[in-house]
Length: 331
Image (cartoon, rainbow, N blue to C red; front, side, top):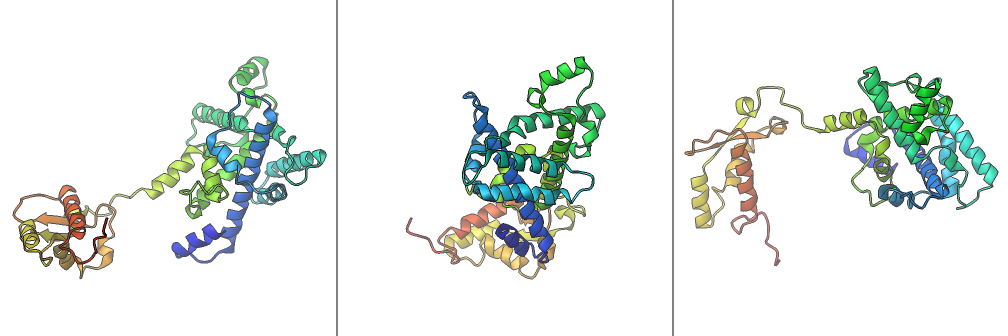
């Protein structure tokens, strides 16, 4: 919640309680999934099964058993946000029933909960979805419905199915449909809320960002591509900075002479400052580059190279003794 509040304030978004409620429910869902994964690894009894490093690390940041039970219960409320989908309630009921049967309290091992879903089952379910995506010629994983995730009925096809997806051998059609609904809704929430999640500090294993990163295998490729495309710079709406941008004239000969004299009046930084100080900032907020550079007396046409060279020279000047803006440190 604190991460979301900071993000909202940074983005100057209106204070909206629903945003924080959805983020909290997403975090509860991730905790429940991770708890089930952890229990599955503990109950596998197979020494050859290696816990992925990302999951093993984030397991240490899971809350106490009481909080995990709350997260499982909270999934029931999450299921009310999409019609005709009772799978979250069913999953939660099975998990809660398993907890009750084992009489778990405190930090006791959740031995029976692993019978619900494991990492291998989710990975193979997503592999199945990708194959169905190709077979049905759909555009995205999110477009697949529960009806598309069919388990073959005839014996030959089912035998091939179990050969390709052995982890799903104990899953009936209802459980498979339920899990797929859950993953679809999880991805809808991740796509809507990822802008409020800080994913760059995974060492803080108790945070929502670390949990999202640990479960990134569950995020659909089209969701990742949508978020990635939104973060990439868009092409300019006009003909580009070459035709329509602000032009800055730079005389490198005068800048070199000023450097030899130990003055800063004609430095590259000063020339750019004088050219841009009265330009409205909105004209410099471009997707390609802020302005076009004209190197006087050099015959260079700026299609990116002179602009980058100008910034390189400005950085060098600001770190030199001729610039009064910064003070050199002893080291």
